[in-house]
Amino acid sequence: MRIPVRHITDRDLAVPGEQSLAVPAEERPERPVEAESSLREARPGKEQPGRPADAELPRREGPPAGLEPAPQGDYQDLYLRAMAEMANYRQRVEARAQEQVEEERRRLLREFLEFADNLELALGHLDEPGLRQGVRQTWEGLRRFLEREGVEAVAARGQPFDPQVHEAVATVAHPGGAGRVVEEVQRGYRYRGKLLRPARVVVGRGDV
Image (cartoon, rainbow, N blue to C red; front, top):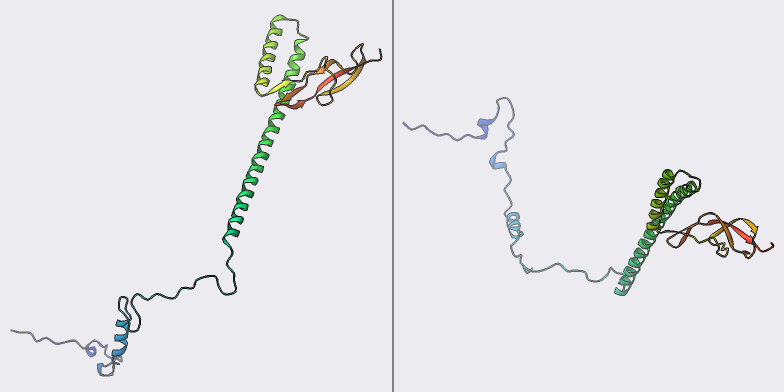
């Protein structure tokens, strides 16, 4: 037994009591054939009539109208100047940083010099052999440390008075010692060739 097949139409899908929104087939606008053919022709890979397939868009060469191209030499000169200024700036920054490090090192070394002065002063007033030996060893160790750091003592006693490295605290009459250091009150030091602390001295006079 064969069951008859019936096609469903828009009228069958419409809800009773409501107006169907479907447009009858006879009232639907036909798709324009010319539009479809133009779309097919405009697809990529299709050669359009009157235009070669490998045609390229025109390119604008040179600077825009009213602007002159800068010579190549000007760009190179600006680049070299910028590199030179950057190198000079880097050198100034490194030199300033190194100077700050050296200044901080000199400050710390001056603190060590005070300990060295106190140890040396203690050696002149200690009578007990054991204690004196211990202080001397400490002072010798500190002195070697200062030498390794580039600190050296300033020559004073018997030397002509030099205001660059000597600081006169007093003058005394001394035969044959006019203008010379006759006594060293506090030892002076240099750090890598530069004065770290002047020597405090007593200078002799010739009016005996």
